[in-house]
Image (cartoon, rainbow, N blue to C red; front, side, top):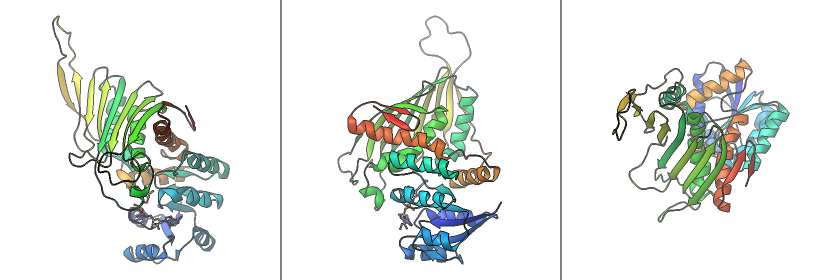
Length: 346
Ligand SMILES: NC(=O)c1ccc[n+]([C@@H]2O[C@H](COP(=O)([O-])OP(=O)(O)OC[C@H]3O[C@@H](n4cnc5c(N)ncnc54)[C@H](O)[C@@H]3O)[C@@H](O)[C@H]2O)c1
């Protein structure tokens, strides 16, 4: 199957998508679109592409026989770009998040079903080889049934641009990754959230850039998240630092290469034993697929070619979105919020 792709949004992240498309033999980029045409021209020149550039997706669709749209615009544009593409009977692969509001995400989801066009969302962080190794080890019951998952995310990046001006920058633009990773690690979907969102002294973000959240998952796991984007020094990994507590032990992943479990040794406890004897078990990364954007795009294309939904199709990604917007709703109302698929209830 050959894919004729229009790339919409020619900023920083689009470079990764364009590189992928160039490398893939059954993909041709047929147009580059950006509201600032100079960005599209810059992208065309930087990648030596011989393709037309447009200021509007409408014109690009009219003048090319595209089959697929890459939406690499800013979050505020995702709904309009993906909706227009699907209304014109094109499939969409888009950057996270699906939309800037839960209502918009649901309207895009409904449109995908109505138009019978797939909309797959970039969740590159679930394609890390260590998280996949962790997931495998948990599936194989290395630490027994899991009861609690904790993630810490502390960094202090100075992005400039839309992130410093938007509302809820941490939860909407970053925590979506961690929440989506939590669904993978817990092998579960969320049922409730309580979130407290705030700004720490000296934060350079207009919106709240710190949050603490407690989620209950549909298999009983409690997932907690502590995060800040205005944290100076002692930074964690961009993948967060993870602690997973099971009935037989604890798995730790520092978000990079350090991945292991401390597991209770199989022996009878003697009377008077205070703490269990522990064996330290390294967990192997799962290298059976590519990582990051490449891994996620491989899966999106494979799903499209096999006529099935991708792992990060909007029908699944809406549950990660529910975690994001449920957290924001909870923070605004100061209450626990129930999450039921595509609905948020107090
Ligand atoms: N998955 C990841 O790890 C990851 C990392 C960084 C960014 N992102 C996401 O990628 C997306 C783009 O981020 P970025 O850092 O490249 O932003 P950016 O600001 O560098 O680029 C966005 C581009 O989109 C253009 N644009 C905006 N609205 C448009 C519209 N309606 N039509 C056409 N062009 C439009 C802008 O002019 C700009 O050139 C965001 O959704 C962001 O959250 C994802």
